[in-house]
Image (cartoon, rainbow, N blue to C red; front, side, top):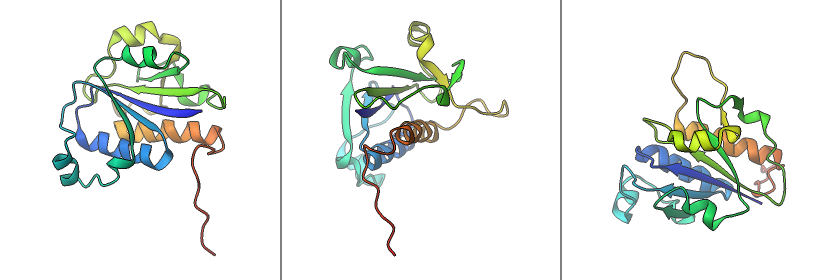
Length: 163
């Protein structure tokens, strides 16, 4: 069982950096679908203070269709404000499943070709109508930790508090 975060053409490096940190801290895999709105070369990462980047299990893809081809048994969920169900309506506890959570661009979200094709697997994070959407890195953290909660945090080692 593993958790995968898929960022579809992310544009804002700080969001991707925060999501990468969440992935490193939870043993989740990060998939970046190109083009990216920023550089991931070593100089740029060091400048951004991304010293955890070597601990991120990361894959780069030219298109979304590369991922289901490589992971034919994956379970995909698409996070989008148009989703009719919410994150808490799904069961992520199957110990044999690889869960892929797909997030869209910060400015335009996921393309309609994906959300139309996978309508039953689209969900949203509950929120008021006072904002258009939640921040991408916050949303990814909410989703990853909900999946981990349902899995009793099995994929990660939780440090015991010192007495």
